[in-house]
Length: 234
Image (tube, rainbow, N blue to C red):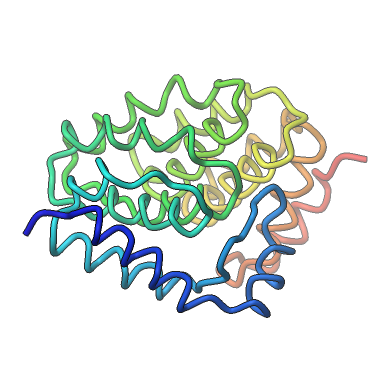
């Protein structure tokens, strides 16, 4: 069944009906830079996206004009959930990147994307490589969050750590994602990640935040946590 303009208007009506002003105000405070229009919770947005995926996702993408935070979220869920090979999804993923204007849309989109084979991973990795160094903050964060969510494994982890070591500092949401990625690498590959922290080669904020996150992990031995304190930068 084709997705029609009437279906799109019905979606907007559903969003308005699900609006929660108290949650909107709360969530607005958690996502600087976003304008939360309705205050609809993520599980409800996922439910709306699943309905679109069962109907006509391509038709929805061609008709919708994301004018709200919630519509952008739904668009991301639809792109992530489409049953297409990555060669066909990549242009849709790339078209979504300009809509990412905050950490919540970025991270939720990254966690929703599925890579179904090693071939798809290799293709996605090649697409991510130029984005790590992109001057646009959320393009770079997208690459980093994709790395920490999908690529902290052989053979990508060593390459990813090398990229992080070379990133310029000073963009908060990139720096936070870099620290988060280093902490995930340490939990999974401590022997590989520890030398990076020992060299104290990362920018001070990234170095110290990564160590903080590692020390907060229940999966890291207490003796490692004590040792890592020595590598904090003042």
